[in-house]
Amino acid sequence: MRILILRLARENPLWGYRRIAGELAALGYWVGASTVWLILKKAGVDPAPRRVGPSWSEFLRAQAEGILACDFFHCDTVLFKRLYCLVVMELGTRRVHVLGVTEHPTGPWVAQQARNLMIELGDRAEGFTFLIRDRDTKFTAMFDGVFTTAGIRILKTPPRAPRTDAFAERWIGGLRRELLDRILIVNARH
Image 1 (cartoon, helix red, strand yellow):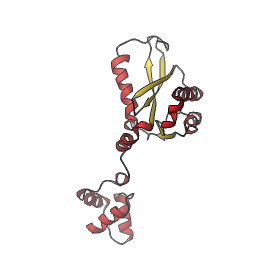
Image 2: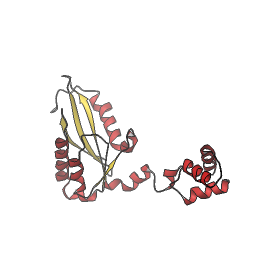
Image 3: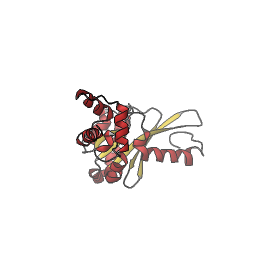
Image 4: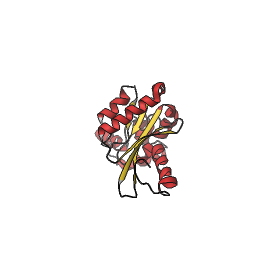
């Protein structure tokens, strides 16, 4: 039975332990999914998504020169207003572009900031192949269109997975700890 489970896992790298247990049941072998998981774990076989292709961190390291990561962060002013700031980071060089600050970010505003970034990047924009962004509703189809017309693919992060945009999140965290927590912001210009 163990050999059959390992063979199914090796020949079908996208199948997880539940799928393998289901396929065995269709063949007339009743094995629990937890038993399949235990056998695969003891044999050193990774879970299904990890058996095919590079991991997310391996992908980021290999493609860093061609990846942009963008995110919003907010800060509260002394006058009790919340300001939103849009930033884009070039992962290869860790260069950060602060695209704009506003009290009310809208889809057209965000799309215009993307156009401004593409103008700023100029010919260097051709070197980027991916843009990592979260699923915020402010990132509209117009925003995505600015990058896709330049040949940049949009990679949306999974819901509730801040580690997939770890570079931008870490920079924002450092900005908060080292700057925003230490000074009082008066307005958007400040």
